Image (cartoon, rainbow, N blue to C red):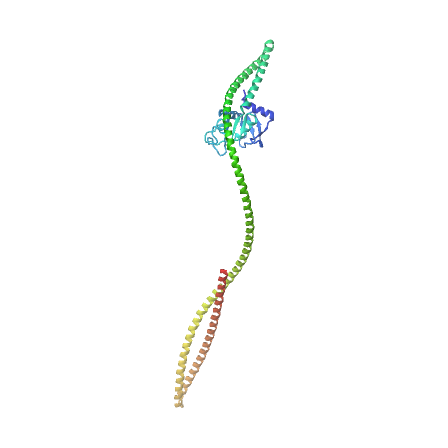
Length: 417
C-alpha cells in the first residue's frame, strides 16, 4: 500500500498539473516541480534537482517525532551537527535519514523545495524558520470525512457480498474479485481504527493546546500593558524625533552656507594655485638662467686661474729678463768705461796699429751690446704690454664675478619670495 503522504502529493500533481508551479513561503516567487515514478524533480536545486519520494515521508515523520512542529535548519556554510543544523532540524534529519550523512559532513540545502511541496500539497504549514503539520481541526475534519465515507463503502461492499451469495452460479473470476474487495475492506477498517486512535491522541493534544492558549492569553494581556507603555515611549520618541528633524534642517542650512563659502574658497585657491604655478615657472626660468651663469662663471674662473698661472710664468720670465738687462747694463757700463779708457789710451797711442785694432774690436763689441740692449728693451716693452692686457682681463673678470654675485643675490630673493 502506498504511503499516504506520497499519495497526497501525487494527487495534488494530478489536480494542478504536472509539472506544476510551486510557490515559495512568501507566495511571490515560484519554482517548477515535476512528478516522476521515482520522485520529484525541481529546478531550484542546481546540483541535485532530484528529490526521492522517501524524503517527503521522512520529513513528515520528523515533524511528528518532534510534536508536530520542527525547525527547518540552515545548511548554508554549516556542517551536520552545528547549532543551526542539528539532527533535531528538518534539514539535518533528512540529511541523516535519507542521504546517510554523518556528524561533521557538509549538507546540500534541500529544505526549501521539500517544505514548499509539503505546504503546496496541504500536508504541512510552511512558516519562517520552522514547519509544522496542519492544525488539529483540519486533521480531525479529514478523519471525520474518512469515517463518513467508510460506512457507505462498507454497505456497498455488503450489498455486493449479498449479491454474490444470491448469484451462486457466477464465474470464478467474480469470486476472486470479491476476495480482493474483502481484503481491501479489511484494510480500510484497520485504517479507520488507526485514525480513531490518532483522533483520541489529538483530543489530548487539543486540551494541552487549550491550556497553553490560556497561558498565552495571560501573557498577551501582560504584553498589552507593556504595549501601552511602549506607545507612550514611542510618542515621546516621536516628539524628540521632530525636535531632531528641526535641528537637522537648521544644520543642513548651515552646511549649505558652509558649502557655498567652501566653493568660494576653492575658487580662490584655484586662482592662487595658478598664480603660484606662474611664479614657479618664472623661478624655474631664473634657475636655468642662473645655472647657465654659474657655468659661465665657472668657465671664466677656470680661465682666470689659467691666466693667473700664465701671468706668474710671464712675471718670472720678465724678472729673469730684467736681471739679464741689469747684467747687460752693468756690462755696458763696464764696456763704456773700458772704451773711455781705451780712448784715452788711443789718444795716448795714436800711432800704434795694434791699439787701433783693439779699439775697432771694442767698438764692434759695443755695437753688439747696444743691439742686444735694444732687443731686450723691445722684449721688456712686449712683456709690459702683456702685463697691461692681463691686468685688464683681471679687471673684467672681477666685474663678471660681481655681476654673478648680484644675480645670485637676486635668485635668493626670489626663493625667499
